[in-house]
Image (cartoon, rainbow, N blue to C red; front, side):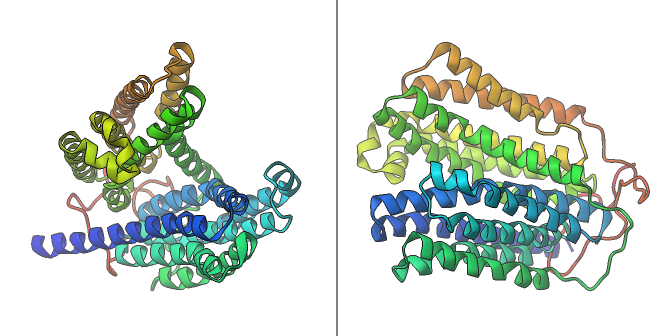
Length: 422
């Protein structure tokens, strides 16, 4: 039995990892292809448009997180209305901002409407991904991630290959992305109907959105500060280093994805396993950066950045620390902790305060400030997690434990007790 369980976990991990590689690969291919197909002005417009989608789509990531936790703790329930409201708010915000976006970013007037369609589709799809993750159907989750990435980026890539220009590429992308919610809804369809009276609340979605936003802000704060504090050449060098940080941050995220449903059911051992995998992966990457820092910088930015190789372990350490922090953040969200992301916002505020006071104007100066912030933020999150209350008792009325066993379609169980605490 143990062998079958570990085999299933390995299959899920490989599937989600491959899906993540595909998502990031397609996202990377768009600007690479656009740089070869568009003139600088068109390239800038497309980059701005895709950036707007990334920002407006943050509530979709928060929705997926909230739905996954709710599904794991309560079983199947109707989240369609709240999902539709979230999608409408995100798309509506883009439409309402059309005059500002057209004027400030010099975008064609039809682009915000295309972005609104794409954003709404991403948010609607996030509900299905959350259902699959919360139901521990990880192979289907991986398929869903791949399908959404194909719809989101594949259409833009096709438009660029056809020479449609930025607006045409965005139009093709909006069309392909609009088809994904229906496909993912069928993929996420289970054999059961709603099995609980517990409802996903707007407060839970807002908490998930806040946590997702905090993740993005804290992991990109030093890169944004680099543009303000460093010279153009040093800022460019720092941005190359952050490629290593992001690699160390996202490489072990499969552990957090697999652990979240079990964390929502109060399985402390899953947290231990996820932290061990994430910490071990980070340690390996830091060690590799120490031994081959110059090669890492050359791979990330070219031979011109070889001389920065001695800083590679520090960049990797920042990403590794935040990867651990995000596992702890998911654990706090799964436990229903209030202000779960507060340590991250404290870290951001601390980094801004330190850099505003010391005004570091060199790569190592800003890098040491960012590393110190990552250490403090991880420590604060660890203390907050330790003090967090356990999940509510297993009572459907109290909104606590699990009202039914998890799905067994193709999702493995992480090692640990099968019943929630309480």
